[in-house]
Length: 123
Image: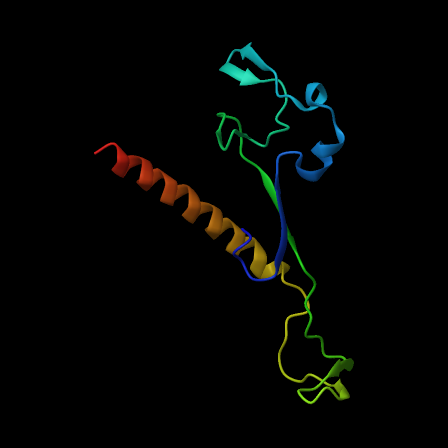
């Protein structure tokens, strides 16, 4: 996900908020259920030790705000002179409409890539 333009952060499971917990509070305890062996919680976001533990995998991706706004902004030119730029043209004011399908596609590509790597390694 960090390879996607404008992405500034990535976390899975409890992410950064999990760093405020002790290990005993954050652990996903394994239990027996009618669906087999599961975890009581899913603080790990389905990933433990770098692999899936069988629970749902979930993550958050943080995007930086759009820098090119249709608004005058202070900057410095190639000569080091202070100037004001006044961008023109068509610029998105929010990445959200495009970000969702891009993140979904990246997740799908990573999962398929690892599926195929695993399949090849068994040949």
